[in-house]
Amino acid sequence: MTRKERFEGVLEHFQRNHPVAETELDYQDPFQLLVAVILSAQCTDKRVNLITPALFEQFPDAPSLAAAEPEEVFALIRSCSYPNNKAKHLVGMARMLVNDFGNQVPDSVEALQKLPGVGRKTANVIASVVFDLPAMAVDTHVFRVAARLGLSVGSKTPLETEKQLVAHIPQELVAKAHHWLILHGRYVCLARKPQCAQCPLTPWCAHFQSAAQTDQTAV
DNA sequence: ATCCCGAGGG
DNA sequence: CCCTCTGGAT
Image (cartoon, rainbow, N blue to C red):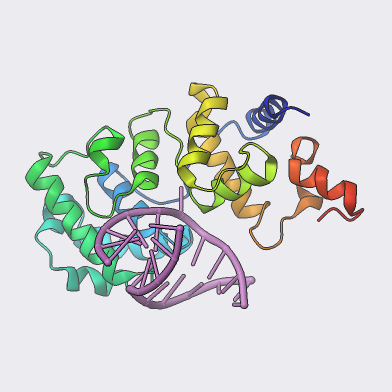
């Protein structure tokens, strides 16, 4: 099976069975999504959604967060990973939004990455979800799932996987494909124990097919 | 023990 | 390239 056929099979399956695919983070505007995505690093969406209501009640927008001290934010995000770093990033991000971007979330990956705490992955998420750009954010799930399925080949970095995926996915499907791969990684293609018995993508999966040749259980 | 929608710095 | 930051869940 060619890589092109893997892409077509996987994308067709998702389009038919999961026409709607969205982030599971709770937010009400671009600023809040930016905050939520920064908090989601090495932390589950569920835990982020648990703490953002209190955070957004106290700091609902960039100006209020810009006026805060990192220590105040730290107390509210304590249960997420890296609270010290994230508290500094969030306040710094809000201050740069207010001071340098006219309190508007920038609309390009390049500008977004200038914000403290915003790397390529977070910038791609905002570009895709908020501005509807064909940006593929490669997080731990996308990186792993793409490699297992055989959608990426020989990629050692998220950036390389991103390039390969964008090169093979129709522009209008890139944003959806991002969420499809995330959700598939979160609930089916688990990092430690992929649930191949429950997986609808095995007809196009490189990992499943190579495993089936050497091991009848094909886990 | 290993993983969760990473980023920044050396 | 590597390392560190760091808490919660399984």
